[in-house]
Amino acid sequence: MRQVLVRNLHAKVVSKLKLRARQHRRSLQEELREILEHAAKQNTAAARASVDQVRKMFAGGTVVPCKRN
Image (cartoon, rainbow, N blue to C red):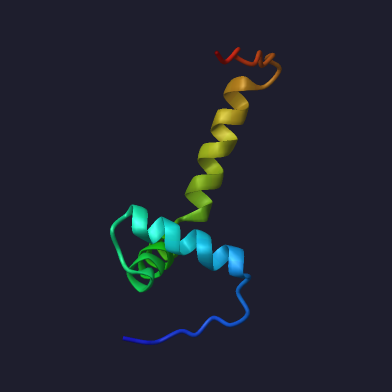
């Protein structure tokens, strides 16, 4: 496998990633690997097509926000 080094990440970003890793009961390295593998699998063309389809469904409509308790 290849290795990747990411430099100059903001401390807040690293803290949030560590928290996310703890929530998933993974090491930081495992969490980062999962995030990167998931991102690499994404098919942006398919995602854009889905978004466009939803936009067409709601075109010309009015969106009414729900009241939250």
